Length: 89
Image 1 (tube, rainbow, N blue to C red):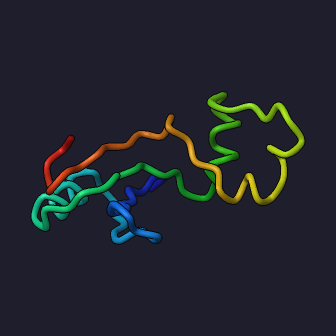
Image 2: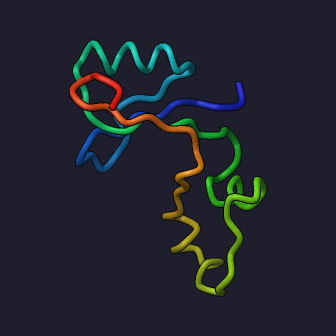
């Protein structure tokens, strides 16, 4: 397995579900009528490093190389799906 699916509910500070397959994640989201974002994350690599490695992001400023930036980095280039009341939005 090289990827996992992580669900973050609207207004949640932490993920509420982690899944080994897109199908399992969608089934759980639909069953519980959840709203939020389901994102595919690579395993064993940080999102910042993944984005740089795949040419989705290139740090242009020194502040973009600092721990605070790297630790809060996210990328819209990651495969993701939006849900509203359990339905894909």
